[in-house]
Amino acid sequence: MPIFEFECAKCHTIFEELVLQDRDMKNVRCLKCNSKYIKRLMSGAHFSKLKKCGKYSECMRDAPCLGRESGCQFI
Figure (cartoon, rainbow, N blue to C red):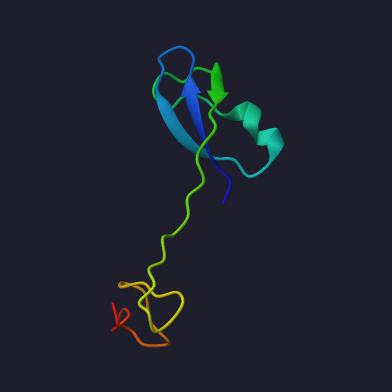
């Protein structure tokens, strides 16, 4: 989903907003003071961190493991 991070130039509030199309970018306003003077921030990418259990290449403790409802039994 295209969720962007913005900073208000007036009150310096940092907030996130879902913007589906480029033309909607001009309609984004500060959530605190409703200012239209905002700048889009460069957000870091978010990746899931996978742990290796030794038995399988990508296992996560809290994720279903090989179709099971519980997490990986080998971690």
